[in-house]
Length: 511
Ligand code: NAD
Image 1 (cartoon, rainbow, N blue to C red):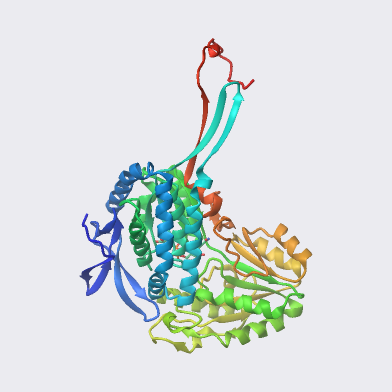
Image 2 (tube, rainbow, N blue to C red; image 1 turned 90 degrees about the horizontal axis):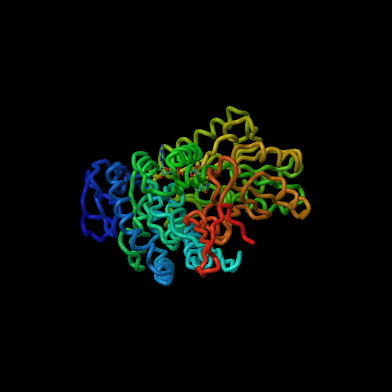
């Protein structure tokens, strides 16, 4: 271990700065010589390297976390709360710094980066209320002279593995609750935009968190696999694509861990003929193209009832014409995609659409960009008359491609949503309360918006989808979060007096 306290040490690989792990309250190089590139997607350049941990590096981080857990679990609730309150204040005061990191490595525009941080701060505020959730229950005199009570204790060292699309918010969904509840954490963020995690960990240290309670280990599959099988990792919280989520759930469960693994999505917005079409078009554009469509709650399919579909498509296309795509620091509406390979993959779906007989109404490949020519750009793309048999419909594209699927009416729309493999988010746009009520009862999806396109629940309601969008039975944050990061004990107690003597081999009854 070194005692370096800055995030990036001035060491160079091929002339570039190298981002270290953050372990035991300090930047740490570990022993692996492997690194990966971190791009600035708006410029199309590699701006730094990130270390990719070996199995041994992970083992060392877990050992340091285990040692720190022994002290942290005994820290008073008042002390743990004080750290969370202080973290909340620091995060709020310095959010522009973090937003700049998000824009530089992910590409999302500054206003969107600040929105991501605001949703993360909500969870920190919820974590400040930890005592209400972990205080347990007490039943007096369940039998004569006997009391039963329950209490919740931390698990130990918990693992968090996060995706590239929310480099700050997704870690913040988990570690504040885990730490407030008394656990120690090893966080493995996405290697594509890793710096936000170090920044957050350093801020937690400034807020008074003891060294080793929050550790950041960078890496790829090797680091993830080491966490999944390590005997001292008690739980895994994962967010990412569905195939990896399924793999994480199966592997970590088989190794005896508690697992919550949130996967991918394909979110539909059903627009009924009685909806306000201008509001629906605004919502489709905001939810389809915000963060360049790289959101698990993005709307990627509009189910338009035939009688209003032409009007809706025209309104959406008109709005797309007003959007500015470009460098996130320049006040644009939409930034670049995360990598060149991902941009090319997403753009490839426009050819698939044409081959499958759909209408490409707006082709984002020709977009005029306010930014560097080498950035990973693709403008907002609108494809009408997409068939549900097309890969454009079936795949999670995860880019600025909005499909219109035309439907006969409500039944047809709900049938399509319920036939899909994912169940993350969905929305209905209508002015008919009865239709909306029926929708919320019938649709097989975990998070539903009624005239709200991105229904991400507030921090005190848990976040999670159904079907292939969530493996495991605990959602993220909210009450599920504290349940997940604690284990319950039930205690039956009697303070003896002589009247309790005597032998009785029967099963204990409470008479
Ligand atoms: P990803 O699955 O490629 O990566 C997620 C994490 O898993 C990263 O930390 C990565 O290093 C690791 N990983 C990647 N491949 C691995 C492998 N073969 N073995 C072990 N670990 C591996 O996801 P991504 O591209 O970073 O993020 C986008 C995906 O995340 C989308 O599918 C999106 O829908 C999903 N997502 C879901 C939610 C949700 O709440 N349901 C939220 C955000 C993102």
